[in-house]
Structures are given as C-alpha cells and as structure tokens.
Length: 343
Image (cartoon, rainbow, N blue to C red; front, side, top):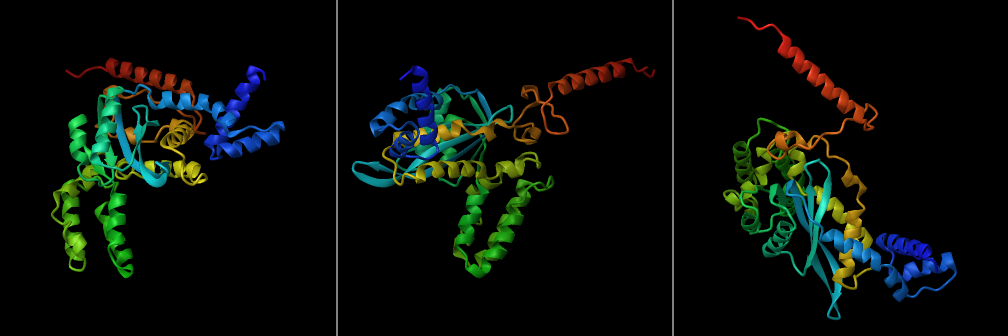
C-alpha cells in the first residue's frame, strides 16, 4: 500500500475511533470500504499516530497566565486488574487572555481528592503556568489549601450550581420549587449593587427560613467556608454568570461521555485519555472568543489585554475595521491636542 493510502487509512481510523467506534467496529467499516479484513491489531497500529499526537498535546507547554480556570472530574468505568470500576478523570478548562478557551490538562486517578488536584496544579505549573486569575470548582473540601500552595493568592469560586442541587435534594418535593426560587435570589448575578456582604446576609436569612424545617440547611448558616460561593461578586457584574458555575466544563464532560459510553467499560486509562484528549483537541467552539468576559479588568488587565478583533455587522471579522478604528482614535487625540487652551 502506498504511503498516501496508509495515511488516509490512519486518518480515517483515527476519526472513526474518536467518534465512538470500537477498534472492531472500525475494522468492519474498513472491510465495507476496502473489501479487505482488518484485525484489531491492524487498527491499533493505525491509531499509533493519533496516540502520539494526543500525548504531545496533553504534555504541551502552556501560557504564563490564564484569567479563569474551571476544574472538575468526570467519572468513567475502566478495566483494571480483571475488574471494572469507576475512576476519576481530572479536567482543566481555561479561558485565555485572547478570550478563547482551551483544555490545558486531563489526568487520571482512581478517586477525586484535594491532594489529587494539587498534583494536577503542580503539573500545569511545571508546564509554564505562572499565575491564574480565578479558579472555579465544585465544593471539594481542602481545595483552597492546595491552590494556595501552588498558586498563592488565587481566588476560588465554588460552583453555585452544585450547591443548589445539593440543597434542593435535601428538601421535600413540595418545598423544592420555593427553595429553588429563594436560592436564585441569594445567588443572583448582574446586579452591580449586590455585594458579598449583602449576599452573606441573604444566605443567612435563607438558612434561618428553611433551617427551621431542615437541619442540613441550618448547619450551613454560619459556616464561613460557604463564603467561597460568593467570590464571583468581587468581579464585574456583567461577567458574574460566566464564572459562578462550572457549567462550561460540564458541557465538555457530556462530549467525553458520548465518545466513551458506546464501549461500556473502557479497556484501560490510556484509551480514555486518548478519546478525551482527541475530543478536547477538536473542540472548534473553543476557538471562538467568549463575548464580554474581558470586561473585568481584574482578570483582564488593560495593559496586558490581547488585541481585540473587529467584526462587521454580519459578524464576519474584518481586519480593516481595526485599522480604521485606530486611525479614528489617533485623529481624535490630535484634535483634542489642537484645541485652544483657556488661560
């Protein structure tokens, strides 16, 4: 077989495998296309280039600063020692200074723990990350301590969606709707006058109201660790809804589950990392800029802001608009300097 044909087969095998087909199913597709039987071993050899690409991507050098980092685990069944069990795969999704997103780490450990996250944060530090503007995570205990060890002074925002789900699951069906509405008011976004102090008062009032009926809510009232759920209120009110939950990374996890669930239990951790890595590499939506997230100057300092693209009214990028905008600003500055000054 000519090398060009081999490369075509390798690309096709990689595409089919990354879309959820097993090696045996990929072999069946090749049999239909080429009229020739391909064993699992043959398909596995074709996937070697994909394994190399994904491994290099997962170990690549990283940028020095990421304004926002979302972290969470997805749990997937894998074979290990002739038994099947669910294991944790740690995922780190970052917002870059140019407002695009990228997965900067995928790792495996049998269980999720604060210590495990400390190892993952150390790894991205060794790969070039020097500073993080904000970390958004779930309510795992001890996480704030390991963050402080690796990236001192990095604020932590705990996921409000996880907390609301946990609280609502602790109340009777008849109370769920009212509790959900009250929590929506406690964790509201977009209000420039809503401060951490006001939110904490709202939180304690919520716990007083429902703590009379549910002990699980009452014991949360004065726990200062819950203030980490209100970190988002320290940032521009226009971006708060983007940073107070890990919803972005949960959407990514749905993609991971989609490509792994067709196989049932995965044969080993390497096969999971291969599929998750390829899925993350191919996320074209992450190449689009997140609108307005740079409105907060704490996370996106003006002096370090990346050049912003200009768009036409139809949404198409037009570099000429940036040139015209710069010319207009320069002309305005000159005109301002030429104004007669009053004595």
